[in-house]
Image (tube, rainbow, N blue to C red):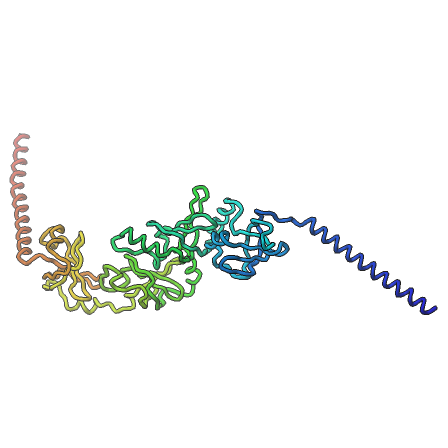
Length: 418
């Protein structure tokens, strides 16, 4: 009897367990069915979000979670390389479905948007966020560089290049400028979108703006008065650019040296190491001075000169207002046009660049770094003085002649009254 009871109890337990299992399975099936009913089945044109799991030169594989694995490859990858060239495994990306199943039995994807409106919306969003994008330069013309973003043609004017890449060509030779710009084809650049106009399909990008944005993030580490050491990264007509500690600043031509500088390229070259002091920080712009770290040579050098002294100097530059003369390596003077014995047109013929002439010092202003000269000879000066005296005599004579006539007029008036 005892064994029979035990068997019945065991049968009951097994039966209860089977029922519990059936109930659990039924619940799971119902939950799965409910999930499948609520799940939106993707279709070509839909955009999905996933994580990059594998990369090669020709393909990017993306884990799309419940939708499986997808791939962007071939033409679809190359056309978006300007935007997605910096992807890494683990990055989250958006991709649009092209085909539900390819020969690998996975989703065929593209990084391009389904519609042009979506493309322009994203471009404007990236512009508003001042997002830095890496692009690959595809071609060049005399006005700048060209590439594409999400398949949209983008243009970078020459003015939007960093000083390092700016095509500085003597005389502005257009063919030479184009040749320099063409050297960037195939190279990658970090840029920002400055204009994204879908109406006119105008997409303008800037390397310079991207550099400024990066600089603004780091600029808090420096202050006015800091002395920095860096490398010449760009040379332009108005000064030089210096890179230091991940930042870049401008040394204006007036802050390069205490001496007069006509062309910064004659003073330094790209790659030169220089020391400079930070003299200004405004937004993302840093201004530097090299001459501030040097002793002003004028203070001592000018002591050997005095007003009235005859000196020899070399003609350095002819300007409409006068001639710049180098007296020695530190001191330059100016012969104003009024101190020339001939007009400025003749001066260009008479005063050959590099020729030596004798001058007389008219004025010295050490604080202003100004020294006035004259090219007029003493005899010419005497003639001028004599002419001035003669003119004064004539004026006095005229005044004396005027006085009697005035008295005569007064007398005539009195007689007429009588």
